[in-house]
Amino acid sequence: MNKLQFSQIFRGSISPLLVCMALLCLIHFLVGCEKESAPQASVPAETQAVTPAPVNESTAAESTSEPVPEPKPEPKPKPKPKPQPVPVTGPPAITFESIEHDFGTISDAEEHYCSFNFTNTGGSLLNILRVTSHCSCADTTITKWNYAPGESGTINTTYVPKSAGWQRQTITVLTNAPESRTVELAIKATGQQFLATTLRAKLLKFGDVARHRSHTKVFEVWCRDKNMTVTDIHCTDERIATELVSLDSEQGKATVRATLPDDMPWGPLSLTRIHFTAAGHLENGRAVEKTLKFIVVANVVDDIRSEPTRLSTGILNPNQNFRSSVTLTHLAGQPFEITDVHIVDPETATMTVDVQPNQDFQGGYVITLSGTAGTQRGAFLKGSVQFTISGLGDPLDGVRNIPISGMIRKPQ
Image 1 (tube, rainbow, N blue to C red):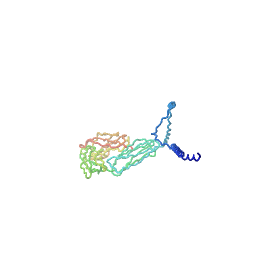
Image 2 (image 1 turned 60 degrees about the horizontal axis):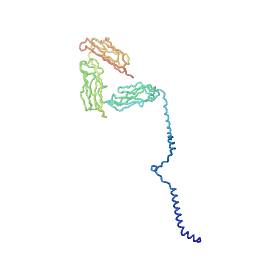
Image 3 (image 1 turned 90 degrees about the horizontal axis):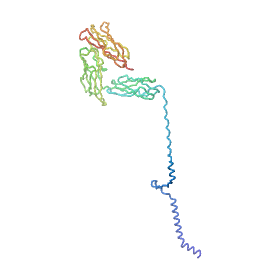
Image 4 (image 1 turned 120 degrees about the vertical axis):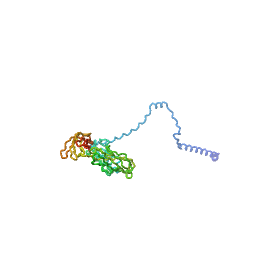
């Protein structure tokens, strides 16, 4: 067999089989390479099966005997120190947020309130020495009297207008601050009267009236609410009768009558007032009640006259000495006797009384009151000098009184 014949036999029978086997080996090789190079798909942590590692008993014993130390916490930053205030030195000083308050238009039938706030802006203790209102219509209170540097306080004020129309009242604050020894606070308002009267200064004047006779006066009161209700009328002297004569709802007017009886004693009336009280509503609908106080001025006289009609001391300082005199005479100059002279119900003063004949042509007597005022500031001097007259017959003979009046000065 020659080479030509062998090659023909090889190409004809073996060649296709070898080719097929070579192709299969190539395919198998390529597939294996792709499997090795392809990335494995990720499996979620919760679905992965964890195979515990084999535990070495000796290693486990060693690990339990020496616990793993916990990590040390990070140190906290140190807080920054607060800045210390610079110490303030120097005298005290008072600074008010405002020294004036304007209420606007307000009624005199209710109370109104305001506050004056202040601070000690100085470097030492501030002392409020005195707070003085110059009108009884304004009442003041203070939280306390001493304030450290930087400390604040308040002066509270209650105010009721004393009349109709524009008004301004002042409050004086006395302190130990060198630059503000005296501070003046001001209250402004336009007052509206709930009740008004035709009587000037609310004086019901009878004047000199004859003894042993009755006397009558009539006066009127208007109310801002025409539907007012009169709730009370009375006199502080129960001997003086008061009554409501009429009430006109169309004009909001009440008519009142006051009557002095025929048995009123000789001499001037002392601190006698008529109180008139009415209720109603303001324009804002609030229900209110207001009282007007009328001073009754009358001097019951007969043939015995006193000049002046009172033993008046005026306004005194505490412990101040005083002296006051009156002269008693008969209108026709007839002589009479005066006995049993003494002081009745003296208050807030030590007093003595002396009687001497009057040396001028009118005759009669001079009664002199002297003494020393007490120490209660703002107190009134009260009482009377009582004596007995004889030698003139009825009805002039009998006991009489001359009232004592005066006052101890209020603090400034």
